[in-house]
Length: 302
Image 1 (cartoon, one colour):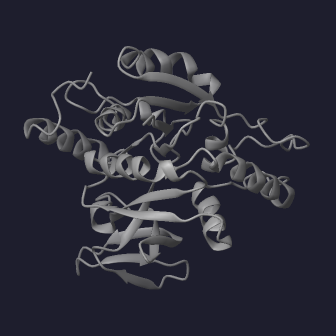
Image 2: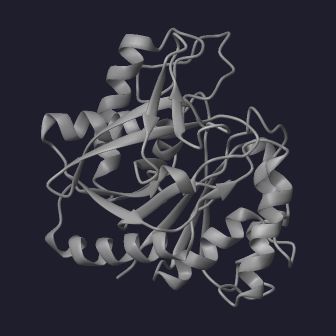
């Protein structure tokens, strides 16, 4: 069955700085995106759509897109502040992108199959793509609107160099029930307990196996019509704000709570890693080197 990989690659990375998606970290000069494409191909995906900005198009196609032209069908979508449903225009002073759900909305013309959507600057591991691919293959013949999400154990998603923001997942009967964003999660050096630091300074202890969202989702293409409806509502309520954002988890949460969509909760024992802070780079390079040494990945992916 045809399946599409959609990579959210338009962001600049507010804490890391620069086009971190283009940072070559693997032993063969690979970016983290290269690993996602490689693992998606192993999981049966046969098209990739990169969501980028027009101003990075040339560099992106030269450094990234050219690697895959003979391996997988490649397409591009462009996140643009002005790409809004009829009747809406962005505020004149707005420069901030509209968020991940708006970025996904930009791919509505390029994606016609069941698909996975994920951050371009994260490493998710082979198992995540295998699970998503398997679920989409199984669920697609039934048709209709559906979703899935691959959850990670919070202990496998931390940075040694600072706090991280993670969505804590609640499940019901094997489906995602809710995702609540916790913006400051860190392992306490003294107690070794993972803690979520609240705005008032209080602390919530988290078990190591607490499931969190790392923004790796699977959907049917019917999601685009729902995104447009919700985007219209979002713009009507908050479209005049200069920093309001429209996120994929909020789309999923709204559709779950209304009963319009079930989101199958998949879980992986894979370790996530990425470059949240500049200091994470060395550890990421070392982790990728070890994965190549162990034979899980070739020394050079493409």
